[in-house]
Image 1 (cartoon, rainbow, N blue to C red):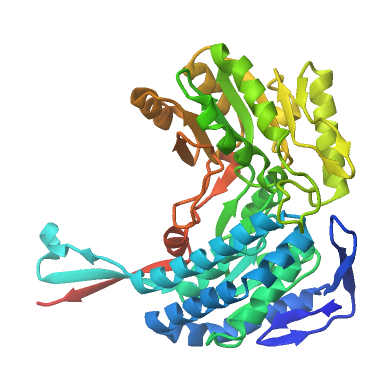
Image 2 (image 1 turned 120 degrees about the vertical axis):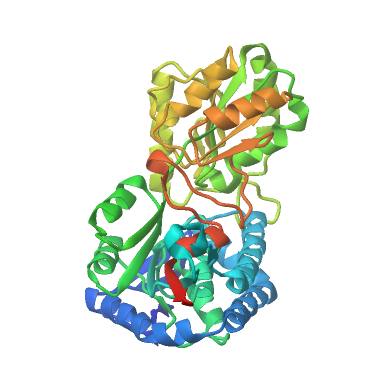
Amino acid sequence: MKKGLWINGEWKMTAEWMEIHAPYSQEVLAHFAMATEKDVQEAIESAHAAAPQMAALTAFQRAEILEQLSTLFAENRDEAASIIAMESAKPLKYAYAEIDRTVETYKFAAEEAKRLTGEMVPMDASKNGEGRFAYTLREPIGVVAAITPFNFPQNLVAHKVGPALAAGNTIVLKPATQTALSAHFLAKLLAQTNLPAGAFNLVTGQGKLVGDAFLAHPNVKMITFTGSPAVGISLRNRAGLKKVTLELGSNAGVIIDEGVQLERIMDRIVMGAFSNQGQVCISLQRIYVMESMVEEFLIRLKEKIEQLTIGDPMDNQTDLAMMISQAEQQRAYQWIEEAVAEGAQVITGGHIDNHILLPTVLYNVQPQSRVSCEEIFAPVVIVNTVSTIDEGIAAINNSHYGLQAGIFTPSIQTAFQATKALHVGGVIINDVPTYRVDHMPYGGVKESGTGREGIKYALEEMTEMKLVIWNNQ
């Protein structure tokens, strides 16, 4: 089954193709077109040609297109979820949850399309402003180039496509090739809406070639990227005056304070650490527990983990399946072995069984171990003890990442202390840092990125402000 490029409302075939296999079953899913530099340029030029028509749409028309898309996802929920489970090995129950979020994300985008506005400027607040009034407008920037990862192949794409279209922009999407079936499904759904031809374009192929073409083309006005810090930093360094939004890595941490009722939080801890095999940007990777509670915490955590159903992602009962590839599982396993060699203790898991890296808990991990200071992006969580909240905050901040962090505490004072002292983009009180809903501002500091997603906030990134001043004298 050959899958082409979607350019100017038509499928285009290429000379070269990449074969993609399902991670779990290893069946061939599709052969995806490998775009050339000329193909990418054609997609950009198609988007640029459609930009005036897209910008001329009313807020109602833009919202209507996004409402149509949201409805189509709801109507095709089963097929969309099955594609995700097949191509990424995400357990089906979580694939359904992703589609439900995707429906909501496009609804948010439709709503924000109607709320996109500027503000009045009180000119007479200045001595020289008398007799004038002014206001600002938010205008589309033109062509947005989006590069997306494998782990949320519909909802993370929605966080780029949704606000881009809501703002009246056009877009060229480069998805992760492993999960490009979802992108093709999106293109088919968009073709059933009132979206002008050329407003959405899809290219697949070699990431560096496509990224370089995005950077080089003068008609690309913004690049929005979710992926590794190394690639994101390279894109930003070479982007010149193009706008750039980056959602990069993380090794999210949580603090467990004294007085917390552990039985009430364990389900959230397990979900935060192991949903989608830990392949979540804000997956819970580091847990800092007060010394007096660690023994009970580890017992409860081990019990909960050993109740998980592990196996085929297409089974509705499965909680955890294999990672995106055997190579990634081997990398994570090597990091586990390194941590053990440096003194860490395996509480549960720690090995690959039947081609699946088992959910792993490591205790007493050295801060310089890669499982502690880098993003493992795997079903692995570390547990260390702290004697004070300040020590826990310092441990979380001792990272070159800063996306989200959490703290469970019965103390309002401690919670406020954490909100001020944690150097991250988002602090979650009495929940895991993996918590996200799709209209909240989402992004990080340090090497976790720059800019914010969440539809309203992404719209601000994807528009330009224009000032208008009227002289009434």
